[in-house]
Every structure is written in C-alpha cells, then in structure tokens.
Length: 201
Ligand SMILES: Cc1cc2nc3c(=O)[nH]c(=O)nc-3n(C[C@H](O)[C@H](O)[C@H](O)COP(=O)(O)O)c2cc1C
Image 1 (tube, rainbow, N blue to C red):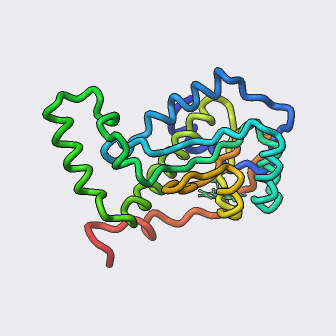
Image 2 (cartoon, helix red, strand yellow):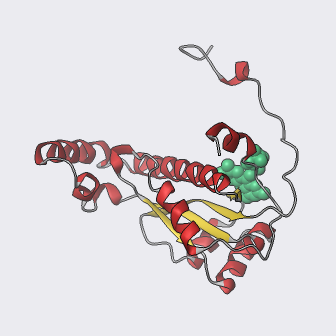
C-alpha cells in the first residue's frame, strides 16, 4: 500500500471483528517495522506489552472504562518506555559504531539526560508516540485497523502490567479487522491555523 494511502485510510476504529486473528508471523512483521522508528540517540527505550491473556484483556478493558476495542480487537499492545534507559548499558545503542563514535555519543547522551527527569519523561512519551504511529501505519499497510487509546486509569493499568520503576505507559493500541467503518472525521483544522512561518505570531 502506498504510504499516502495508508495515512489517508488509517482511522481509529471502534468496532472490531471478534473472530479475526493476527498470526504470530504478522505480529512479528509489524513489530519488526515498529522497531525501525527513530529515537533520540537511538535509545530505543520503548517497551511493548502484547496482551495475549484473555483474563488480562478483560482487566484492561475494565481499566479502560469498558472500551470495547480492548476486548474485541485481535491484538492489544501497550506502548511503554523505560525512562532510565539512557543510563542502562547505553553502549548497546551504538553497538555497530566504531569505538571513537561510540565514546563520543555515550558522553553526549549522558550529559543530555543526566539529572533531567522531565526530559527523560518527555523523551519517553515522544518515542512511544512515534512508535505508535509506525505501528498504526504498518498495520494499515498489512490490512489491519487500529485504535490508539489513552482512555484508561493509568495506575490500575500499571498494576495490571506490573509496570517497573522508571517506566511510563505512553498509550495502548488495539489492532484488528474493522467490523464497522470509523466515524466520519471529526473535523481537521486548516493548515493556516497550525502552520506558522519562522515564529508564532
Ligand atoms: C494518544 C491518543 C489517545 C486516544 N485515546 C482514545 C481512546 O481512549 N478511546 C478512543 O475511542 N479513541 C481514542 N483516540 C482516538 C482519537 O479520538 C482519534 O485519533 C481522533 O478522533 C482522530 O480520528 P482518526 O484517528 O480516526 O483520524 C486516541 C487517539 C490518540 C492519538
């Protein structure tokens, strides 16, 4: 599928076919694409929970105030991030670089994040959002629909998935086959309202 078609056709679907299954091979293909999403310093600090257990799905549905896609979609993925990844064996992020480049990048990265919890969190949220968009577009290209969701109780969700310390939940994405078309678009703002030249007015 052409990328612009995938962008046009991706919509947040609320009703999913309950019998549709995404195979492990397809899921793997999807996630292999997601892992190519860019991250600052190649930190790759996203962590994904693929919810395969039915009982856990239903608990998550409750935490998401009964939103049906959680129970009905083929897959539910929580996109989380490790806010402390910048200081966790960071040489892994530049394993293919030569020693000189690796040393330079690791020093830069350390100085960039050290002592800046807000930045660490901002970066985590940035990365989960970007990963989500890759996931949704790649899913569309594979013939699947998605629904991104933040409508859930974060604390309950953290408990359900055993969210480790220093981790944050970015969002959840339901993936499956649409049982009904998405609602008409809510209304897009005009380009002129959101694009500025050089600086805000
Ligand atoms: C971060 C994020 C969180 C969202 N949370 C929910 C949600 O909890 N429940 C829901 O039904 N839709 C949710 N949506 C879907 C939005 O309502 C939808 O993306 C928006 O209305 C634009 O429609 P479209 O995605 O079909 O283009 C969310 C979307 C995003 C990007």
